[in-house]
Image (cartoon, rainbow, N blue to C red; front, side):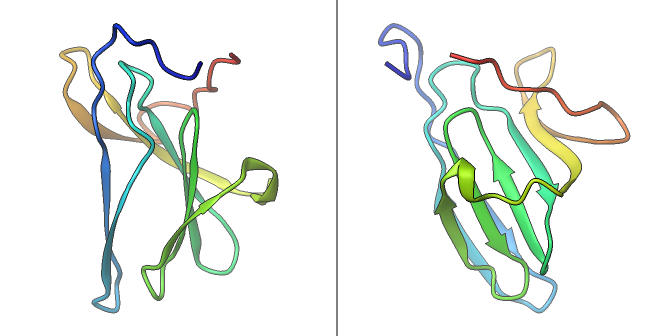
Length: 108
């Protein structure tokens, strides 16, 4: 089971705005209680990966098109640029790679 039925469940939405004026919005895998960190990576061909514990999204930076991807289909040669995560006060924030190194996800 990927979620604990006794933990709070938060719905997360990813809003994307491209440099050429495009925009899109997509729902991410729900946060089943403090498992919602999303690592962000720069991939090839202008793509950005938003990778969570249970899901991965591929964003085309030119069209703002977002798609769900299986982990095995993601390129491995990527650059970690930051994470969306909770701070010490449990507030969502963006943490750049300069502020904190990449954190691995727990194996379950």
